[in-house]
Image (cartoon, rainbow, N blue to C red; front, side):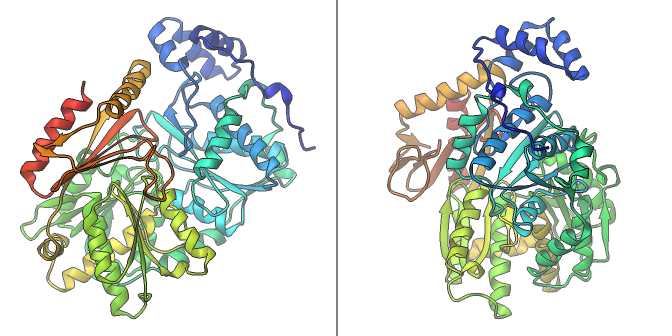
Length: 562
C-alpha cells in the first residue's frame, strides 16, 4: 500500500550543536552510526564538525564526508534529501525516478535507500542493476522517460566522501530554481520520521525495477554514433581508478577497433577505498603515477584515466622521446575541439552553423578553434548542467544536431546529445581515435597542440585550489569572498584591472546569478569562485606570458591564504 505523506517528518528546529547531537543520540537506530556517535562524545571538536550545520543541499545535490551527523553523508541525510524529492515529485505529478551509483563506500546502500524511500510513496523506480558511470544515469533518465534521476557519487573526491546528484527529466542536473525548491523542503525534514516499506516487498509490488542489458546496449550504440576514426595500432594504457569506468570504457575502445589495451591491474576493479590513489582525481599527477609507470614499461602511446563515476577523463601522452606529459583539461578540450570539428568537416557531417559550448573558466583558445569552423560559441557558468541547458534549448527548436562539442576545464567533455552531462566513455573513445589519427600522420597529440598554439597563440592557464575544511574553515571562506566584494581588486601582476564582473549581481550576460568573481587586465584574467561540492575556493588564472602568470599565482596565494 502506498504510504501517505508523513506530517511528523517535518522536524522541530534545533539550533545548537549540542541539541543536534543529543537528538541524533536519541534517534539513531543504525548500529554502526550509533557506535560512531558514542565515540564522538570523547571529542567536542569532532561533534562540532559533524553537527554545526545540516549538510548543504546545493545546485549539485549533496556531497560530504561519510559518517554520523547532520553535516555528514549517511543513510539519514540520504533519507532527508530523498523525502524532499518525494514531496517535489508528487506535487509536480512526476511518477518515475532513475537511480544509479558508483564504486564508493556505501554507494549501493545509498542508492537502495533512495529507491526504498521513493517507492514507498508510489514513485516507480528504475535502479541500475550494477554500478555504472554518471553519464549512463543521465541516459537512463532520458531513455526511460523518468521524471527525475539520482546518481550516488562524490565524483573525484577523496575516498572518505560520497554524494548525491539530482537530475531533471531531460537528463540534466536540476536547475537552480528546482534546487532552491528542494532545499526549502529538505531543510524542514526530520529524517528519523521518514517511513519506508520493505525493499523486497517493493520489488514484488513492481515499484522497484532493475535495469537490463538492453539499455546498456542502447547507450553504447549512442556513444558509437560519435565515432570519427578507427583505432588500429595505438597502444592504450587505461585506468578506471577503481571506479565505474572499469567495464564500459575498455568495451567502447575495443568496439572502436583497439586491440592493444592494457588496464592497470591494481586499479582495474571497483573499490571505494581507492587503495592505490586516495584522491582519485585524474587531474592529479599522483592519481596517474602508477598508470604512467606501467605505460613506460609497455611503451603505450597514451594513458587514459577515468574518475570513480566515469564522467571525467584524464590523459597522459607519450612524446617522441618516450616521456609522458599529463595534459590539462584545457589542453584536452582544445585538442578534441580541433579534432572533432576538423573530422566532421572532412566527412561532411558538420552543420552549417555548428554549436560549441564551454564554461567561462575554460580556455578561450578552444573557442578560437571552433570559430575557425564557423561555430556559434556559448560561454556558460561552471557546471556541466549549463552546457546541458544549451543543448536543451537547441532541442526545443529541433536543432540539437547543431551541438558538436562542449567541455569544462576540470576534465569534463561531451560530444553528442545522448546524455546531458559530461561523459568519459565518449571522451575516451574520441581521444583514442584522435591519438590514432595523428600517429598515422607522424604526430603526437603534443605535436598537434604546438601546431594549434603556432596558429592561434598560446594562453597560459592554471587552476589553484585553497581548502577551508571544518566549521571554522567554512566561515573563513565566506569571509574571504565577502571581503573581495567589499574591497575589489584594482591590479593583477602590476597591470590595472580594466574589467571586473560579479556574477551574483551582473545584468550584462544572460546567465543565472552565481557566486563568481571575474577580473581582467589587457593581458591576463582571474576568476574566483567557491566549489559547489567541496570546502574550497578555486582560482582560475590565465595570462599571455608565463612571467605574468607566475606573478598572479603569488598574488592569489597571498589573497586566499589570509
